[in-house]
Image: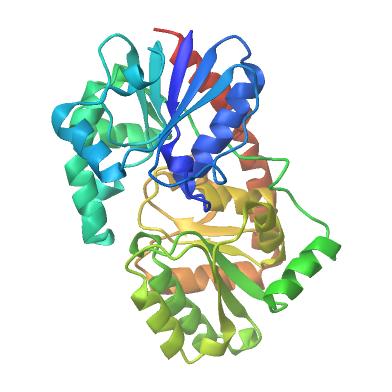
Length: 382
């Protein structure tokens, strides 16, 4: 069987959640499957070869094209041309790890992973360009055109049923995974952690947010809660807030709030953190905060738990499913709740240690090996 996979999300050097999912999924599928043939499709007018993953298995072949992206997408959208499977070698299956423009013949099956419907539920958190892109791609039509849908959580499956009326039997839930070889506890002091700390001149005591800087992540609320904590509890005079992640969109308010904060000198911003460095950052943190308004799955809280860090996150979307009682859950728009959660964890060793132990147990449920096997079963079984 020949399986074509759309890897256009892997053409950028910095990986978002979708790219992390795609890379880890494919890496693990290729480890367990030597029988099927894989054709990895991408298109870019520029040379992106340096950014692409280095899969070298004998049954994996890259198919790169250099059409101008705008013209290519317009052709797929309005003329259903070119047929991507015809550009390849007539694969039996075309697998898309994320929403994107596509056009294929009816000879093979088409399978799509849907991570979330945040663009539909919270359009105010997206830029005009992103909203235009999602409207233009017409996700509902694309999803309906597929033979099967993979949802990364029950929450996403429910959203697909409730808002797009997708039949339940068409949707298979496969939880995303976690790299347990990378994300793990590190006994401190540790030479690599200290090197990382020195490189970024990090303080001794800090709480952490890591993720793309965008409105949906509620980083503005986090900064305000940090200010409230410092004002109400003078014992945290030496506590800092570290915000790490790629600058996404609509993030001006984040930097404005950080600059105007009475504790601005204790708010640190780190840009995109390489995957190999993230475990050091997690392990150095006192606790991890992720008060997002909505997530289809949410990697960072689980990564933090795997590193033995207590987690504060939200009582919404997929968090109850993936984290449940193993994290301290708060209403993301209640600053006092976030502030109290921070205080409870930092001031009560029993709560902190309980969350750490529960978190370490919780992450055992998620592995890329299981995700790969379950996904492969869906791809290869009609």
